[in-house]
Structure formats: structure tokens, C-alpha cells
Amino acid sequence: MQNEGIVAPNAFTLSTALKCCASVNNGLLMGKAIHGWITRNGIDVDVALHNSLLDHYSKFRMFDYVKRFFGLMDIKDSTSWNIVMAASLRKGDMENILDFFWRLPIKTVSSWNTIIGGLLQQGLEINALELLHDMVKVGTAFNRVTFSISLILASSLKSLVLGRQIHCQLLRSGVNEDPFACTSLLDMYCKCGKMDKASVIFRELKLVSCSKGSQDDLNARTVLWSTMIAGYVQHGMVKDALVYFNSMIHEQVEVDLFTLTSVVSASANTALLELGQQIHARTLKLGHGQEVILCSSMIDMYAKCGKLDDALSFFRQTRTRNIVIWSVMISSYGMHGLGNEAVQLFESMKKEGIRPNEVSFVGILTACSHAGLIEEGCKYFKAMIDVYGIQPGIEHFACMVDLFGRAGHLKEIKDFVYENGIHHLREVWKSYVSSCWLHKNVEMMNWVSKKLLELDPDEADSYLVVSNTYSANHAWENAAKVRGLMLEREVRKIPGQSWI
Image (cartoon, rainbow, N blue to C red; front, side, top):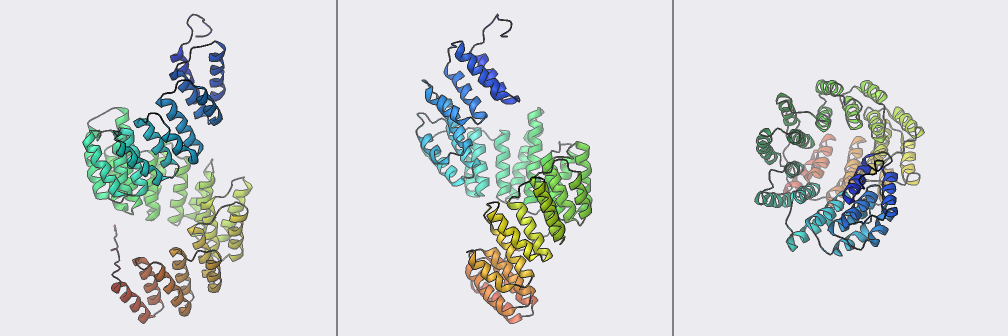
């Protein structure tokens, strides 16, 4: 267009060109070149073109440019403010973002969506919930994006009450056939454990989606099925997940990567090797053989089904080995009690330049625990804190308690618990109880059991752990006392379920 010299680019053309820059390799330089051309040629820049320039620099994380350019703009509309607000959220500037939001001259529904969605992405669910309440108070009407974000927020908080309130508003608004909002609604009920309600909604949405035939609608159908299958897997309802998966194939709905990963997880959790192998074959047929998330699930599946050699073979065949792939294989060795092999693999990972994370340290500490490698376990725990700056979480502490416990170092566990200030963690005391049972130390178990029940007097699981531990040691009188205490405090056990 420029070479022809017949027609000069206008503001609309330049805005379109700037949007295209985000999808090319040297997009930032191209965008700067367009910006320079605008300045040199004295182009009359309206607010829309200004916003396109703001958006361009924001997408490439040039936050100083965004801030400076925004300050130079004479005319700003709501889109201008939203772009800068989104850039601040992407930067992680949480200290100033709320103040910036309340300074907005006009708060459109898009402004509310941007701030609530941004806070949610940063893991600040409570702040997002407070702003959602503020949005309702000022009377801003929800659009389909608001409904989707709000339902994702309810899912994150696992708040069924909030989810139901939003569901009611969704029905009243007439947006209840929007694919994004509907998928978020289905996911909310799944995440909150209401699979019966989710199945009812699924059937209703399935009838609607079947009546449409566009590509977007076909994609929406796949997402609906995937969400249901993942929900059943997450809640251990494997039989239902597999029924839905078989129906999905029978109805010729496109099976996506997310669905395959969910079914592989189901195979791993129930040691259904044959099903896992069938999914493996299907992934190769569909060309997903090297997808990292699926590869990690396949390694985990083979390891949990007792096929460690197949897991290792799959690991070696994986071309792109990120921290997830390495961590799963390390955990697989630990699962099979091969601590030395896990240590060798962990060291190989470091030599490859892969920096260990929280998950990989859980894997190596578990491996050391199962193999009785106390010295190595203590070394890695110390390195995690001192070398990699990772603060231990509940799982790391529980691994260390298990490490000492399996070796019979019960006194060291007590010292470790109080030295690290973790006497408030229920999981730690449960592991401690198990260690006392393993080494038949009833005196120590009495003390630890008392601490556990004091910490969590309303949790049935704690009573059952203690009672079963006493029973396993033939301390029937103590077991009966714990059961009696459970009845006295009206603590009820949730009935077990089986899909067999």
C-alpha cells in the first residue's frame, strides 16, 4: 500500500496493522516502526488509534511505554483506562491497581470485567469477590463475560451459594445459551462436587448444542463433554467418567487433548492399564503423542499401573522434557521405592539446566523417604530452602516426617515439628501417628494421638486414623475409647463409596 503511493493509510488501517503485529515474530519492532511512521508523517491520531498503540505496547509487556504514552494522551475513553488497567494487572502491580480502578471516570461493564478477571488470574479471589459485590451494588448490568468470570470465581472459591446466585441471574438475563457462560456454569457445579446437578445441566446444554452445526458450536460440544469427564475424575467417580467417555466416542464428538488427559488420569488412579494403553494408541493416532501435559499423564499412568519400564521408555521418547515431565518420572521412581534411581534422575535434571520446583522436591523427598535415604533427604530439604529459595509447604514437611518415621527416628520427628513451627498442621501429625504404629511405639502414639485430636476435634478422619492405628496394634481398649470420644462429640464419618 505504501509502495503504490496511491492511497495513504488512515487511522483505521494503522490500527488494524498494529493489531496484526501481535501475531508475528518481530511484532514489537514492526509496531514501533508504525508508531514512528505516524509521528514522522504528522498523522491525526484519534483516541481509537491511541488505544491501538497502547494495546500494542501492553501486549509486548512494555509497561513503561504504556504508562508514559497514556500520560501524554489528551483524550482518554473507557477503553484507554481498561487497557492500562489490564497492563497493570499483567505486570502484577497489585498495590496500585485498585486505586487506579476507583479513579476511572466511567466504570463500564468492561472495566469491571477487566479488574475482577485480572484479580482472579492473580489468585486474589477474595478481592475479586469484594469487587463483584461492589459491581452489583452500583447496579452495573452483567454481560456474558461477567457471568463467565463470576462463575469461574465461584469455582475457584468452591462456593456453591455464590454459584447458585449467579445461575439464577444467568437465567433471568437470557444469556443462558451463551457457550462460554454455560461451560463456566457446568464447571462450577463440577468443581463444587454437585455432579448430579452438573449432569442435569449437561443434558440440557447437549440438546441445545446438537441443534446447531457451526464450528464454534462443535467446539463447545467438545468442551461440555470434557468438563463433565474431568469433573467425574476429580471426584473419584471413575465409572461415570468412563461411561461419559464411551458415549462421547459413540456420538462422534471430537475428543480433545484435555479429555484424553482426564481419562488417562482416571486410568492411573484406578490402575486400568488396558484403558490407558488404548488412550495411548488414540493419542498417537490423533497426533498428540508429544504434548507435554499428556506425556506427563501417560508416564504417571504407566507407573501407577506397575509398568515402570514403560513409563521410563515413554519418558526417554519425549522430545520436550520440561520440569513437569522430569518431576513425574522422579515421583514414579519414588512410588516404586527406587530412591537411588530417583536421586540419579534428579541430578541429571539439574545438569540439563532444569531448575527444580516445589513439585519436583516433593517427588525426590518422597523417593528418599520410601528408600530410607535419610541423609540425601535432609540434604535436598536444606537445598530447597537455602539454594533454591523455596519455602516448604505441607507436603514437604509431611515427607520429612515420613522420612524420619520410616527409619524409626521418632524423637527426631518431634524436634523437627517444633523447630519448624509446624505443630498446627494436621497432615504432619497424621504421618507421625503412622510412624508410631509402624514401630509399635504405643507410648509415643498416645502422646501424638492426643495432639492430633486436640488440633482437629471435629474432623472424623483424624479419629479414624488414630482408632485404626490402635486396632492394628491390638490396643483394643484405646481404639474403643477413641471411637467413644467420636460418638460423644457427634463427629460423623462420611460413608465410603465404590464404583466396582
